[in-house]
Length: 118
Image: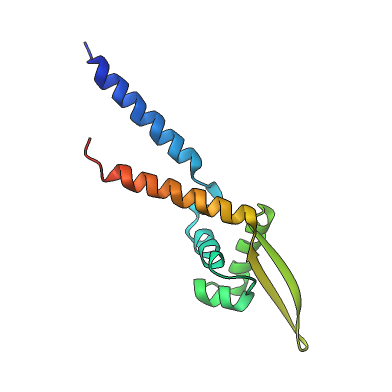
């Protein structure tokens, strides 16, 4: 017969794992999106070219990622001109900052649990 204490501990560990995993933001599981959002967390209205060069993406790849993040409410974009040249600026929204913070906390929790002996 199984030890009830072991079964309870196992159930608690599983529940804890599920609770933490549910705090992971699905959009931020993509390393490229996570890199973009993390970069934007330290900036205010970053120019498209700066983000592109920082995360080492092509214009089209970054544009697709920004479109996905914008549709999810993680980022805001603003278009304008510098002289006669069109420019796009990107900013992390309040919801994006909250999502990044919760995602990092969930990752930290997973890393902390991984270091604990069973």
